[in-house]
Amino acid sequence: MENICDAFQGKTVLVTGGAGAVGSNLVKRLDELETKKIIILDNLSSSYEWNIPRSPKVLFIKGDILDDEKLKWAFKEKPDIVYHLAAHFANQNSVDNPETDLMVNGMGILKVLQYAHLVQVERFIYSSSGCGIYGPDSTMPFQEHDTSMQLYTPYQVTKMLGELYTNYFHNLYGLPIVNARFFNSYGPGEVPGQYRNVIPNFFYWAMHGQPLPITGSGEETRDFTYVGDIVNGLLAMAYYKEAVGESINLGAGREIMIKDLAQWINEISDNKAGIVFKERRDWDKKNRLLSCIDKAKRILKYDPQMEFKEGLKSVYKWFLENRANIERSAEF
Ligand SMILES: NC(=O)c1ccc[n+]([C@@H]2O[C@H](COP(=O)([O-])OP(=O)(O)OC[C@H]3O[C@@H](n4cnc5c(N)ncnc54)[C@H](O)[C@@H]3O)[C@@H](O)[C@H]2O)c1
Image 1 (cartoon, protein in one colour):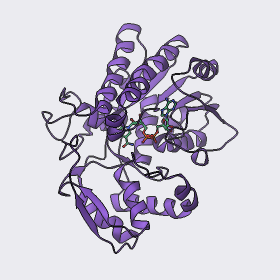
Image 2 (cartoon, protein in one colour; image 1 turned 30 degrees about the vertical axis):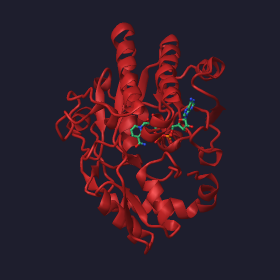
Image 3 (cartoon, helix red, strand yellow; image 1 turned 135 degrees about the vertical axis):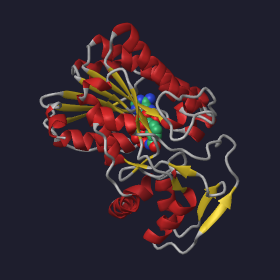
């Protein structure tokens, strides 16, 4: 980890989507390193001012990745490294709003890549998604080469499109890109809401004494990955040269059943209301998700550390500490 930190010394880093769940955790870590400056470009469409890390080194630009004025402002700072995390998130939101999804996740990444190419960044790291890359015809645990064209939501289509664009910039222009394939990130910093992930939403309902709704049988599994481990992987992607031009899974490499997750969250938050089963969402075809993280271990020395229940407890702690802001912001 020592060398990885050195890689950020004196560097200017742009984080699009830096106010979001993963982005805010990444910015906090970048701020602790000897970076020169961290620029956040975020339109706050799914994040909140109160959740943005504050520091003299952090420049927050409130703006859209589709807005050239804001992009010029961000890239005038000549970032050395770009983390492109801004996205229209996620599956249900994209089914409800497919055109916005295509604009932000398709046109948005194209614009950010064009500016990154113009200022010749040293590294461009894109937050891809395991659920947008692997499908029913991929073999578990998912290995990076085993991609699928059988996708079920516009979000899955556009997250894959993002990888096609980064690969194109790498292949034609030699842009040093890395595709980081996330698997169900969880951790402090994710505000619950209609389109958010299951863990923050379960905590929100549990803290309101409501039964936790499982859309399916509860036997479904996900490879929940602690955001701090993902951040470690993202930092390593800026450091190791062998990562350039590669797509690499950043998962935990273990499956968690949704009914176990619900039970643990009820235990941690002392919610007596139990679980309620609801109809499965029609786009939700993926019974199980599990990443193979051998490539990340080999190239990035990636080694996810967080034990799952400990990670859940840290989410609960964050909820308790930020309860007033969360209550004000959560929209369902
Ligand atoms: N969280 C996960 O489990 C997960 C899994 C796979 C991939 N990803 C990807 O990782 C990235 C970060 O995920 P997250 O959980 O932090 O999501 P998030 O929604 O919390 O963060 C995305 C950020 O982008 C911002 N944004 C959205 N549209 C924008 C626009 N047009 N211009 C500028 N900013 C915009 C939002 O305000 C938000 O702060 C996303 O690209 C997501 O697709 C996340």
